[in-house]
Length: 478
Image (tube, rainbow, N blue to C red; front, side):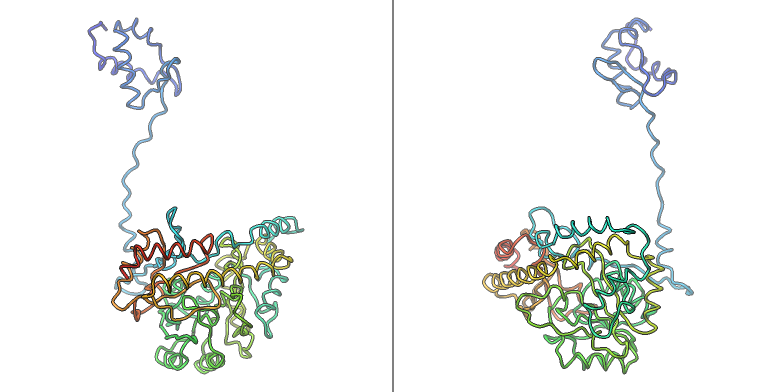
């Protein structure tokens, strides 16, 4: 090759010789290439640069050029369109029946807002309210227990089941309790045990979106029963059982999510009586008993504690009052239904990991546990009052039908005709994440609502600042 030879010709020559070198092998030096091909150093430099751009060689200043690892060929185009039919085909039918699972209502409260956005949409305690030191100490002690990493009984550790039984109250014993991986898992097991696919399930209206997602994912049909400030309307409950033929009613009698209402004393026995007459179960989701505010006063007993006939299936969890990652809860029931609950849980998950159960036992048995509950109750009351007061001052057009004495949220009615979605979107643009009310209804909502949580921010001052931000931004659009 002569001096006039182009860099393109040199590239072709070098490309044809690359197989002589192993991956990572060094090519001849620029000086050697100049002498061999009788070209200028500029031509060699251009040729090596072209090969480097093609990914065939790697040039290292001062070291030379080396053969690169061959590039992987581009993956073939993936065609997953066939899955649309497979995922929607109805069994035993020639028709196409959609079977989608909608988790959007749950993800609203699980989504982490962007940095700088006030998190008034969360469903868990802020890290400053979590017993992090006590949790760390409990987990460390649990890990050192003899047998801590061995397989636990499928029902759960007897000592932990006994603790839950005492907390739930009444005639329940450890033999009536199953340890679950948190409240959501317990609700899923309960609905699978009590309602076959296609069956109606009575739910409070409004209610926790996670429950609606569980019901629909199981192929069941949630049927709303209206609530007021005293809990579920028992006159409508009886009518709903008769009209729908349901065999399950799911309720939150204490600090209901999202309204914060407490089931009135006169209605408690009525709920059990109506369900018993209908041959149905009541699933009692007692998610917020440990989140009672400092001014709550004596709490009513659980429905399960006053249930002589095995009507109530009770759900309890440690997650809400500790940490999102301590997913330890309990299912309690009496009679043959307990064996079905147990069988479904074993099929789904075998058992809850023993270290978590041991850590939960260490935590609730430590002197720091009652102090933590008192501290959370006092702080939640303070935050509730700060948020409610700020809303009254800054956004009086939002109506607060009920000031709760437990839980971590306020349920707010927007003015008639307000655009709920626009309010939520405007709030987020202004730097405040709130939860839309629509996902809490399984039928058409009676009006526009939003839920604001006061547990997921760093302090009460952030709540007041968030409401002022709403007043300046999204609040004007309400």
